Length: 165
Image 1 (cartoon, rainbow, N blue to C red):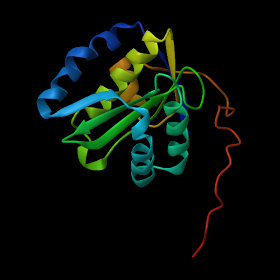
Image 2: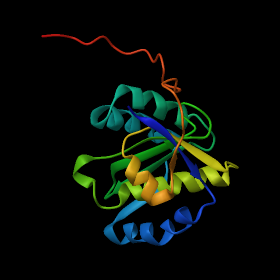
Image 3: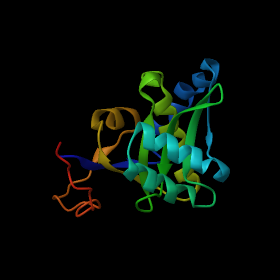
């Protein structure tokens, strides 16, 4: 079962990430806030690499002013994204990096820039909903599990029926 985690946006682990993500530029990777005219490209990319659910969340994040979406670009191509304030205010995610770009620190860079943007907008804490890699978030930003029963924000989410061949 996936859990939610809480990140203190003023904690030391977060402050220490700036130096770790600075090296991405030397690899030719730029992380920046997404622009509204790029939304259709982002939606297509997220649908191809991840899921329709994440396209929905991305669309909401892009509707904010400024957009609540950060992207990683290499040689003019999208290689990753991270959103905030999509499903609920104060939530980080969804986030993803293309399979062939994982392990290069891009996810860490997206996490850092997105959490810093949340802090700049007045959030003191961020919630990472339905966490996949809990150890990653605990080790990099000091995220802590939020005690809860099964009633999370995604409880009762409509899903497409499974098809059988």
